[in-house]
Image (cartoon, rainbow, N blue to C red):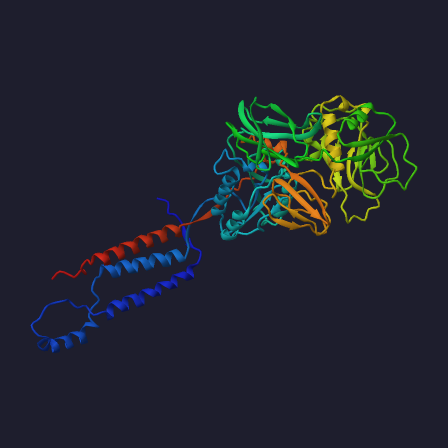
Amino acid sequence: MKLIAMSLITPLALFFGLLAVPIVLLYLLRLHRREQPVSSTLLWRQAMMDREANTLWQRLRRNLLLILQLLTLAMLVFALSRPFTYVPSTAIGRQVVLLDGSASMRATDVLPSRFEAAKAQVRKLIGELSPNNDMTIILVDGSPHALTSATNNQSDLNAALDAAQPSLSSANWSAGIALAAAAGNGSQAGSGATTIVVSDGSHADDLHLITGNARYIPIGTSGDNDAISDFSVRLTNRGLAALVRVTNTGPSDDKVLVSLHTGNVLLDARTLDVPARQSTTWTINGLDPKIKSLRASIDQAQHNYLSADDVAYIVNTSDTQRRALLLTKGNRFLEQSLAELPNLQLTRATTPPVDSSAQPYDLYVLDGLSMTLPVRANVLFIGAQSFFTSSGVFSDTQFVTSEASPVLQGVDWRNVHALTSERIHAPSWLVPIVQAQGGPMLFAGQMPANSRDNQPFGRVVLLPFDLLRSDLPLQVAFPVLIANAVLWLAPPQGLNVPANVKPGEVVPLPSGTIVRLPSGQRVAADLRGFAQTNELGIYTAETKGVTAMFAVNFANPSESDITPQPHLQVGGETPVISRNPQFSQHEIWPWVAFAALVLLVIEWWIYQRGLPVFHRQK
């Protein structure tokens, strides 16, 4: 028979067992009298005096209540010493847990949610920690960060885990893996570090970059989901028109009920049949052009496990005029796409304007040409430009990935190809949002307000290839891309605020601007702008009598596809198996404390029942 090793975490707590001494003394000093009627107390006075004098020092009699109280004390003292047994452990040395905090982890195919199910798995790992091992928990969202430093304190680990919440962004796995590598470098020599990924595996292709020991704990059971993938408005001859596109990312056909609201007023509702892996559009005409904002929502669906993409908001800016300068040698596709945009006053030129004192344009579109730009100009660059450094060209323009961005809302880049494209070395604030096999194909970003760079940019969108040497102008995605870029580059509001913002994006508002959140809370912008954009809905900003509105939308097609990946490859190396068995501690004090509670209840019950004290039979 194999014995189970047991030890104590706090053995000094056993000294509390000395409390048994005063309990026993209380029973020794207790007078054991029986009630009995007598004819006169005078005749019994002397006998009672002798009894009181001798009872204190009588031999301790067997008492059931005393036995139960001593057993309860023993159990409580044993529980305070925190006994534990050794059980086999699946991890070796230091453990680095990568907890997926992306938006897809909000899915409810696993109740109450994938994220809560993932936290439950991490709690199991925490409970298996051995005294010689430690753990670091890293939450992998848009900006991965460590929830705890390396520790084996289970209370600290559980407290940090309880406070973790999923974000509305995609998981930046490359940054998370870099953090995990840094955290694992401090492991003890020879013990190694085990990277444990707890995720649904959705869009986690970078996990093969993990080196060393690696484990994958899959979360999620279903990929069924419906999302509002596009929501736009435009002014027509019949009033304001709204377009709602619903995309079914799951494997089953679905029937959804979609509604359109302004404030709390229902404008229209429609039931849509959405085939699996396809989209269905709904156009609503004849809306009041004076409507300030609209909300589209999926109210009912049969197969829908993610609620974050069930609602979309939009600010109506169709009555605001903007001025744009197009500098080009000739591009009919570009000219027509810009000319079709409502409330955009377009000026076309082949050479830069000579009058430098003229009022700056809201937007500059430079199609292969350059000019001296005013300070903080919003620019759409197309083709090779002298403003950015290029290290040559590449011809492999096959689509790879895209990032969540307002510029790409409703844009399908998968069938876009170019003959060649410039390999641009962009500054850090200009982020690639479309990646091809040869390099980035589309950039977007905003120059920080406190930048010391001499480049006079505000917001910038950069297409590093010639439109006429690509098939992009022939794609349906082209006019949508131009409309999105113009709307993001030249917001049609007094505070130069974009009409559509993704969660977590910093809005460039003047310091002190009061912003009313969708919840009704009012927050002041600071020197860097307004950064509290984690709540979906309509925001209202006001300063010096000028008011502007903007919408924060989920709009993340990659996260809307919640299909779990239960067999994802994690790590590129074969895990190292230790020859010596590894053990972790399993604390049993909760069971001991429960046994003490049961004994205490039994003792109370016997006391209330008044069972007699046991005496030795003569």
